[in-house]
Image (cartoon, rainbow over all chains, first blue to last red):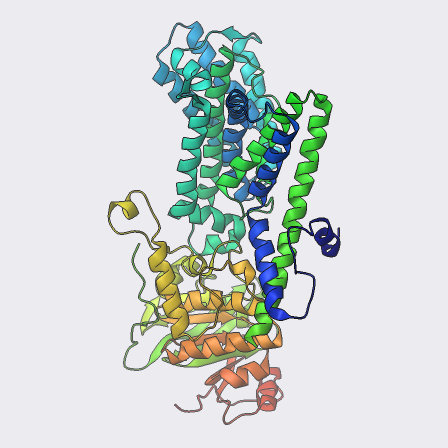
Length: 353
Length: 272
């Protein structure tokens, strides 16, 4: 789609970007357009919520929103970890399997009669982190610079281990702490939503305010330069996979708590939702660009589409189509953003003359 | 992490020679890339290094920046013999290098790019334990040094990807100037740029020299070399064929020496 056509489609959002004369207003128009586009995913989410609320009076009820947040919490948690990996030019498709494996480990501990909640939580998170670290290690130190291939392999290994350890059967009944984490609520707010909020806050501070956060964008944006400027590139990349694994462990807690069971099939296919959420959230698959909050918004967009279509009793087959369309829409918004930035840059260069 | 002292080079010794190479040899198998080359960079000058392809220019620069280990000869920094273990070692000793590819992280802002790999942290426990960045101070320092170098940029908080090619390279050059304590080496810094953008970067290189930091400029572009350089080091067949002044020699002279059409009896300096 040429930029000109894109503009026509979205003409209402960006007035006054079409003319090449009358410099002042034109630049302002571009700026306003960019401002809107940079909030891109939030813009889509608000529009979707308005549409869904208009189509179904049940959508904005407290009960449904609680439901929506609980349903979305797992995808959101996985997406937050996935964002880090994608920022450093990788991808982690093993997160669904990591989730399943941590759930099974917790189930095995229950079967062995070991019910200390804090230990369960620690096992979920540290087993996930270890698995993630293994992914990162294979990619960086193992010399296999194709994250997709490596994590496809560990996706199989993780799921296989989960099935093997559980004997292919589901254990019912999890420890109380896990139950609360997955299905409890505080003042009407589901605990999974609170967990996601806390994790988002932590990762937002880490990525935006700390040295490590600066480094992941440097490594993703220009790995060679980051390397020769003294950024510990390998460790930065491995840390991202490790956090992605830990996030899968946290998503595992929510899964086990919601279902009150440890199924070896927990999390099958969720890796695609996680990657989708990150892409809808505007992160670049070429690395170096992305925002934690936008990954959360991406997950919410998927959640709203699913929940809304569900409420309207639309065939679930439409769901996949709707999510596919929103990916393409988000990518086109990004194309438009880049076009406008280029235009603004050319203008600035001319102004410097 | 130490706070850098921007644009305050440590004064070199009385002789005024910052970086020197004596009789440096480098062989790759049967091929001799450097055949006993001498090199001398003085305080406060822009020294251009020119030579035909294969004359040993890039090997010389690699030896000076620690990217290759010479097979013979010695390298002296401020009069003291040095053996660089690698490029990082050379950088720790105050030698910064700028390459022709635009060495920036696109999505980060200008201040972050200037401090890439040497970020400033908050004072106290927030910085040491929690590794919180001191964004405000980095922004201020970046603004100050860009103003000192008279390099015009839209805003220090702009993402680098919103800049033109010349401005981006300007950021890479300024970063080198900000952290180099002894000298800056620029390997074809304008090769990827257009004419106008090249002009911006050349201005910046001059500003760095005027701040007292010596610059080694490797370039194929003779007009640029003659516009900027205080002295021109000419490589031929792995040796220094001559060092000339752009005031006393023409471009034709330099090309003649480069290609061997003019023989120079000995590699003489054109005087101080």
